[in-house]
Length: 193
Length: 251
Image (cartoon, each protein chain N blue to C red):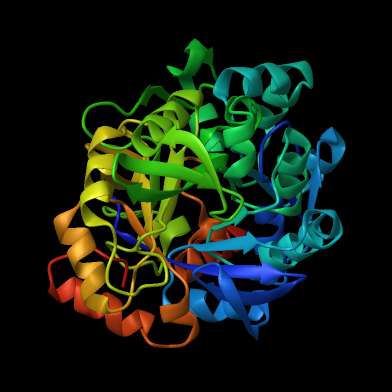
């Protein structure tokens, strides 16, 4: 089985690759359309800024490619936000898989939301075997509001969607590759979908 | 609010872990990758690796070490001590560091903070500040506490936030190595006056010091080195203790 990690102008995508290798899974970081199309599983990671990342994806035709994929796709962090309609981050227009607008944290809470928070309301094969209330590692300043495709919820001043699933598109706001044993379980679940 | 983070700090010299007592008297305590894994399994929430190798040597050794750590660790880690320009930051990012911390180089050229934040995001850059309380307040020092900068702690931290760092790591030089507790008052003022997370450093000697830090201030995380390295504090036991004190920690 072959897992592909989409390569684009984002930070620290290597750590996802390392995490898969720790699980003894074969993976490759690539922006080659043919390789992405043929992969069994596709991971769409990301740390970075929404607008410039979307511009980059469009310039490479990766936006259309992602929407055409039929195999399970996992968005991570910015990858989840880019799956939404649009983002408050420089008013980026995004992929439109999840029909919500990504918002910035405000109010009295510390931004970025950085650290380990609990996830609840778990309901998806992606989160099978993960106990309700498990801690996972988040680093983000923008969040996906709760919506009809949420499969996990967390909170930081406001309640927000920690993970979504729409058909074969899955996404998590936290970093499974940095979330200890819980994160490993989630990656394993994704790889066995 | 996320759980309060417990962060062991590993000082690294020429690829090996050491810990200085009050920045001097260095003793070898082990392999950085193995120690990191051990801490992660014990429940550390994050790790900080601080490279104290002389700068001309570290360009060779640090990226390789960071790759090794990233390949083996399943929790986040910060790398400090090796970053004096944007290129250093890029190399460490590509090696797999989750965050880097800047200290002396940021004091010398504050634009470095803006540049790293703009290119790699605020979450990637932690501003580390060493400061000592003197008669007229808290003075910022660089070069491992040897050079006074003329900057004041709270002003510098605010400036760092405005320039785009994602976190402040504040070490009280008065408290570091003394094991009599953290600089509670300054830490609380700092964490209340900033909108980004604050990591407390310097002074941990017992689990009670962590408890008073988290109940008495608004800081987000506690960093310590020797109490963990010399096994004076056991992380799982301490986290259970903190939990019993009503402090949210990841168990």
